[in-house]
Image (cartoon, rainbow, N blue to C red; front, top):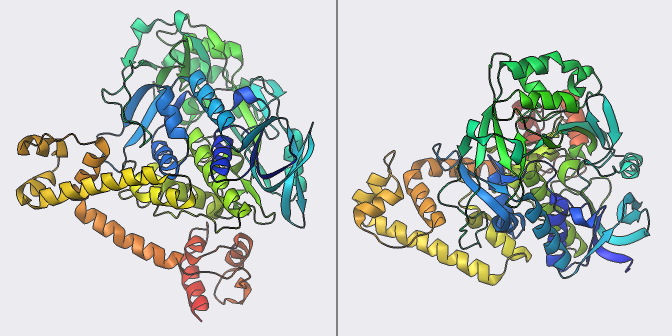
Length: 594
């Protein structure tokens, strides 16, 4: 094996796949090191891509030239547009995936990529000299050199699996954890934290009484995640809705002491927005019932994922809980749920490029950054891969700001504020969500994707045709003011306008949506753009790397210590550090001006 690469990516999960593919596609000789080649792109938890705030991430990954959107388009078995009644700023695509086919698609894509090699081995350390990463130490192949390293180990760093009072080492059920790598990171000086999450039992569909459950069908129209997918025509597979009941809740309350979350066995931060079933019952005692989603794992399998029964109870308690639910009285387990505890880094130790502040050429992405979810991991992996490639080629880094992308918000939140619990993206985290939407991701980001080398000129030309189509339709409406005024009314869609005007043109979902939003919300968009202008002004006020905060009179010692530790790059980033007050920003602005 060649012992020298431009980029080495450690980990074959969703972050690692995007990082490795980006590195290779940007012309870097790239190596992906993974514990198991067959598990590249594997869905450890729910068999779905997208969701509230997450669908936007997938569209942005696609607009920049990533792979996740194409992967789900090729393997989805059901599509739904969430929040369709709440307006375009909140709309989020979600699709059930064929779990096995998604894994195979991503694995085959990685294995067939030119310039990308794959090695089945365990990374046990980072080789660094004088604060610069020079390669990766592996268990069986020794030291492998590189110009840059992207670390994406997921939940494998010092992972411990819990089922009740049963605890054993593992990064995922049936797979070994990575202890030496976690220890190596601590030895390099990283501030480490402990987080936890859990997954649900998987059930044999042949033992579920679906006649007692409510079917949830997919949307009639499937809107592809990828802007480059023409059309998806499949027979969709339904999900099913179930509910907990008083008996379920009694079983959970009676057995709380056998759960790691209530036995005092662990104290790490858990996922607040996707809690365990035991945590949900305790926190929401006033609720007599909670909805569950019984989701298919694929086309050619009878296995179902019991979404909503996230748990770390012992298996016998899990079975008692499941059997208390109508329709699941005789359901048999194919796999039990389990909790997992793992090491992550304090992400305030990272630059906005995802490069480590004190070890150059080392980039971190995915769950090791404290996130939860395939989509967050993939977005971070893509950006880490892009910036590792640009660093290897001595080019300027790519940084997306909060007004450009959900990915920009995700990264800025992590590096400016850090996180004490697994971070999940939501539309509510995004200040400028009216102009940063799913439908306009290509308008916002594809020129960037082309400029860095991930999108072809042919794709950019197709986007330019789409943009011209939007402008032509808007001009057509401007020439008929009554129609434009009518479109601004609540409850009137562009589809309605087409029928009233007798237009028979075949117009894509993305074109129709952008025309409707641009006209219907013109005043709001203009106001939001003015906010973006103000945001960019403060973001452009650069803070020198060695700026002395101790000399600013009026700042508390606590704020001085935080600014000195975080070393924000701009006044805007400084303003988002927890505990840094508007008054402190004003004092800092005066000092910088002087």
